[in-house]
Length: 383
Ligand code: F3S
Image 1: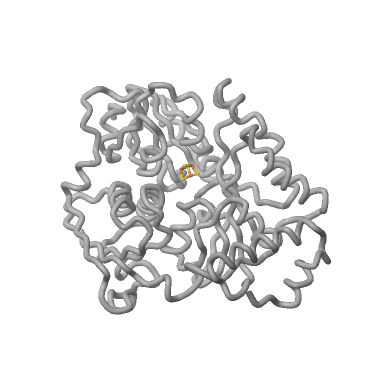
Image 2: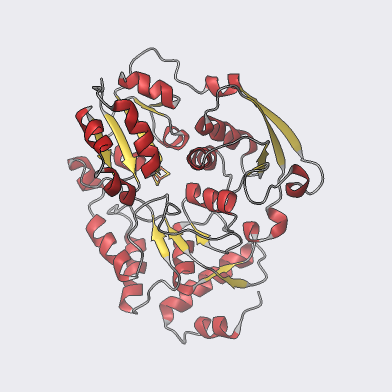
């Protein structure tokens, strides 16, 4: 790999052993994928926010950074907290939360605590090279904003954040951003989250191009999150909607490798068929934006939910939501409003609870979870 003089100096230890190790990690990572150089990045987004007591090596790396006064060289945001104060099981499972939060603050991470970092805290521009972990955020940044990131791991991103560089390979390069699979839609009642889940399963890690459909930004967020969970998709295009797909000729280099048609029956097949009632309903994975919460919250006005319901929002959106009359109505209806990651919060003490969710990602990650459309979930709530 060809290195710039500044990169060689860092590697030689001129800025300390920890930064040298971080850059060495970037070089080795790049070499594996045959990257020719390290390029400057505009931002990072880290995924390591769950204060699990056994993550000792991670905390040690952060401590070493603090000892050498190393801070993030580019704006760096961070994923949601895991609901560590929710109950005693979570307090034990995430007993290192306070320590982790302090270490992240010491290295200069922006405390947005959201996987939807692009909802205000960290909004890359078209063509920006960035280094993000968190598959749903990677998906949105690449696909909807036209920024360029690989689907990195937490520690790779930490090394990128403090060095300000990422190896140039994969989705940083034009040739890997082309469409590979054309997705035709035979759908009468759109459910973007279910669609994302099915696309992820079928294309796995290729770049799908959906034929034109007027998805809203919230649908794109929820579809991308599901697609990145059920498959390894890090970039999708929508003909005439997302920035690198003005038309099919522009996004495909030649013909698609394959054409898949997803039908209404495919979407409906994902929905829960079990007549047994769920124990709770969860909304917000990826976390809900303010607009999403206001929209969904309207359904609960003047109603009483039949079972426990969670709304999980981006923290800043949560703060704004709590100032609204809709929030008061939602709480009166019995909904609990949180700003953490519902999937992490429910993992330690889930037991045999059956959860119904309209999130393809939550459905993928949590055991004993059923999938329903937003309408199915509202019906289960009795509103
Ligand atoms: Fe975000 Fe947690 Fe879901 S990080 S995408 S709310 S699993």
